[in-house]
Image: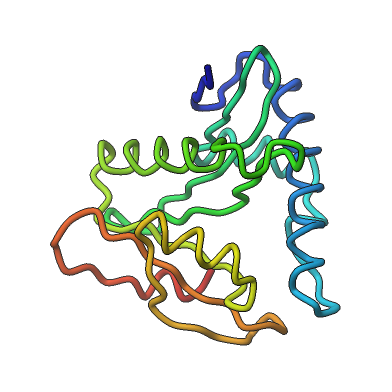
Length: 171
């Protein structure tokens, strides 16, 4: 049974080490699928950066039998807009439902927190990942190439309320 929870001060060093390892391996795979020589922030992230995210933003962790299998992070861009980033699943656990369960949990928590929309960026040419987000009811709002590849801004609307998402363009 998968256990999903918000990271906190309890067992923080263990969480940071596992999140660090999983994020590095998942984003190395992501970079391979970009087919471009670019720098990804996730690959240069430090354990101190993860600690800062745990303390300042929301970090959800998926674990099973005491082993952390994945994590994702949410930052508040505005009272209506949540930004999802650093979504990573242990490469040995890919395609086993860990990511879908973790993402679904985060979506429900965002609803409880009163967000109207969740935004995220990903490579628009990484077809498998783009299809994954479509399958989770996200859609492409727009694209840009400011980071050396075509990034898609995906949105998942949680309410029917009109929302200013311009804050997501800066991420």
